[in-house]
Length: 165
Length: 160
Image (cartoon, rainbow over the protein chains, first blue to last red):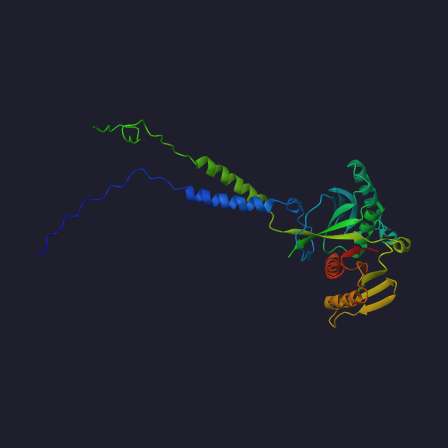
C-alpha cells in the first residue's frame, strides 16, 4: 500500500503584487512616435469644413508651401477664412453684387477680398500662390469666376487641394 | 558574521558600504504618454490631403497671344456638357480634335490621354495645356481631367 503523501497546506500567496508596466511604456513610446510622425506636415494641420467634400485624385505628397487659403463652399466663398461672397447652392445668386460674375468671368467680391488680404498681410507682389479648397460639386462657372478674380489679383499659382487616394 | 534582519535591503559585498538601490518610477511617464497619445489620437486626421499645382489660365485672347514664344504650340482641352472632349492646338499648327463620350455618356479619359499623347508625339515641345469646361461641369470631373492631362503635359492651367 502506497504511503499517502501528506499534502502540504495551501501555499500562501505573496501580498505584494507588482504591476509590470515596462512593456506598456514600450508600446506607448512606439505609438507616440507613430502619431508624431503622421502629424508632421503642413497639409495635415489644414482644417477642412465637414460639409466640404474635396475631390479625390491620385497624387503624391508634395511639399506644402504656405499660401493664401481660398475656400468654395455651398453657401459662400471664403478668403483667408473670412466670407468674401455669398453663394446659393455653389452658384452666384442673382441678388448679389456678383450676379453677373458668370457673364464677366470675374467675381468682384472675391477680387476685392483678395486685394484686401494681400494688403493686410503685407504680401509682396511676387507672392502669387493660393491654396484652393473647393467642393467637388462646384460648377465650373463659379470656379472660373473665382480663378479669374485670383488671377486679376495677382494670384496665378493655384494649389488645388484634393484627397489622396 | 551576522545578518541584520532589518537592513535597508542592500547587500553588502566584501564588507563595503551600502549599495545604491535605485527604483525608477515610470508611473508618471505612463501618465504623460497616455495624455499625449489621447490628444494626438483626437486631433489626428485620417484623411490625407494632397495638392495639385496648376496655374490660372489667362482671361483674354490678348494675354494668351503674349505667352512665352518658346512654346510654339499650345494645347487647349475643353470638357463638353455632353461628355466629350474638344482639343485645340494653337500656335505653329492649328488643329482641332474631338474625343466623343462613350455610348452611355461616360467621359472617355483614356481617349483624352491617347489624343494628348498623339499631340505630344507630333510636337515634343508641347509643355503647356489649358483645361476649361462647360459652365455646368462639376469640379470633381475637372480635377480628373487635370490629372489626366498632367500625366503627359508638365504645366496645366485651369480657367478660361
